[in-house]
Length: 374
Length: 129
Image (cartoon, rainbow over all chains, first blue to last red; front, side, top):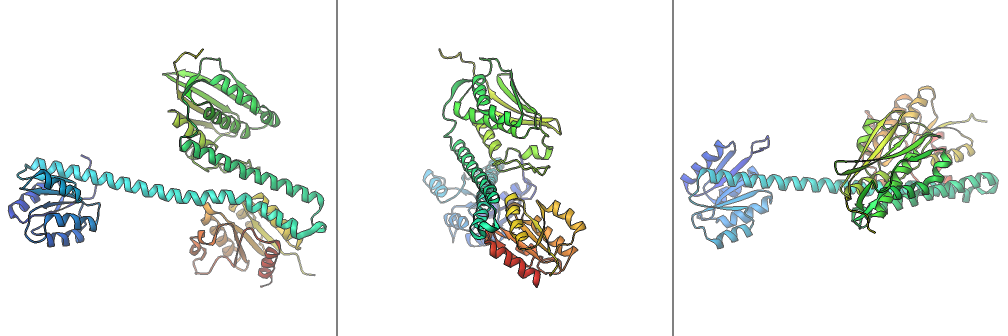
């Protein structure tokens, strides 16, 4: 069993001396730090002081009852695991103790193995609870940071637009020439487009996350789908002088999925390959069927992605720091959307890249072997 | 006629650079711009600005302060104006703005968006103090 490095503490509360001694011996031998108490009052004081990982408590004791120890321990720290031992084991007492917060129930007499087993299981439960708690806290922190981040991303273009408008309002025609004004209005429009793109991508991402984008699971031949995406992007590619090439025979790369989300996926990947390419570069799309998977690779001839950036490339709002002064606009959400869609469809997305040569994004999805519907 | 004052403007947003440098040049200042801390650092090696305007970004809060501190270390008499679009409560770590000697590394602080007049006035105040 996988024990944490730190020695775990167990408190044993029982009015029976022999019981305390034997529990203490068994558990100490198993590597635990054990503290024993002979009644509920001392036991609770010990629990508050020691903050043990687990408490073994006898149900029937003079003074404060075992039942009360259970409920008061939960008040001290609900993460402490409580194991009840008793000579009067009935179903109803068992139910009652577990209802009041005990983890499990061990009827007397019990063997050393039985005690060790129940303690190990209890501690495993504690570990899982703590792990869940930690993950929840982490998620909450991430969520809070994320809200700050999203609002910042939206605010940045808005602040720029505001600055332009304020200048045009305050400075008048003499100080701002007509040409200057036209240029600034153009910038305002670009920045508002940027905001719209962020909001659009943000909504797409939320839709994928809530399962509202990948709704269908139909047999889809990726070849005509990618062809349509390429057709839609032809103009953008031509404007940058980027050559698009796809060698994909039909009825070869078939997956189960959703037309809409698969279009979004390949549109994002191919748009990126065009956008981050060099002028007159190439975008090549190839396919492969292997071990029941369909792999579509989108290769560009851009500047490549540094290894340290490849790790975080698919994170929301992660933008590779531009090395040149020319900035390329982007929402920072495109690849996050891609990753979501691919995982939603049971596949994976990877990137390989070489500096100054280019990058290849590989989408691997389970192949669909059904024959095409007639 | 007083000599033109030289202002170093650091912001990662091209449009803020465009606006602020327009306004400041219009007000008669000489403006040198930098898109980030690194570029600003290079400029600082050869140029001593009469004033520095530094943008604080929400995800690189520290690096903005690091730059401010660097300016103060190199040129203690150069005033530093921090500009940010973060809400004031988001500027946690403002205590990082104090240098080793406990002095603030910035002299004034304004929130974006800022009215053209307000920016020019703030700059003027810092330059004449």
